[in-house]
Image 1 (cartoon, rainbow, N blue to C red):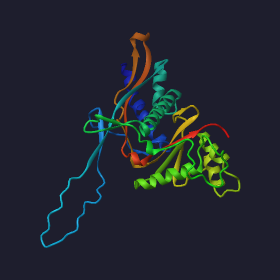
Image 2 (image 1 turned 180 degrees about the horizontal axis):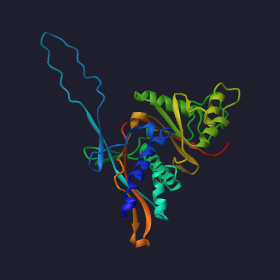
Image 3 (image 1 turned 90 degrees about the vertical axis):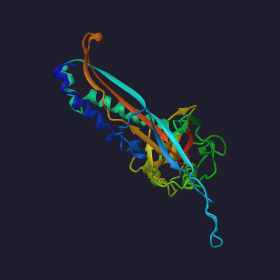
Image 4 (image 1 turned 60 degrees about the horizontal axis):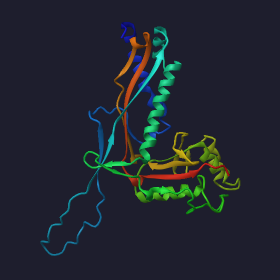
Length: 305
């Protein structure tokens, strides 16, 4: 690396490390996140003691037998995945500009790093969990935690919806997701992630005369992010297939995300590319779903009614 370019690496690396602060109102702030994980290894784990019920016994007599029992230990394992990014820089003069976080190239790399963190958390919401000492057992996301796209269990009497077939996001689906999280008994902030289409569907199916109309309107307009006990996160990066979007409701402690500090940030000339300058970094990310019962998948059609 050029001696002159070396002095700009700390500023380049510092700008990359600033990026999680810009995601506070997206997914980073909605999960149990550690952005400075320094422990070595390719995996991390979340250990819990299982729920104990019925272990108490009635004491009878003056010297009754001692109750016996072992605690049920559970372990979920997350795996780190390394990601790299690179941009060609036209000249040493533009390399100097990378110490400015408002520089277009720097902004582009920071934005892509942000989206990478979002994508890893979105993937972690519903991917197979890894259980056991070293994550040797893979378990699919429970079907019991999925609200079907045609679910009508708690349709609100004010909603204007078709009588059969697939449904968009409805107040009824939000009520069902809330009940499922209530039943989990997990404490913590609650979040709901969906796209702009779900917010539009929610508003269009709610009559102006409904008491919820103004709140949903403010939600769709981005003037508030709270409704029915959920803090809403709008994201266009949630998986969609055959016009069905996988939305998510969860309690914050149910998802663990870890990211290692960036250590391999380089500003170098590439001899194999006619000595063009490049900006390069690597980042390690890992995510796990700690509690299945603390996450609900909500399927919503994206057909406009």
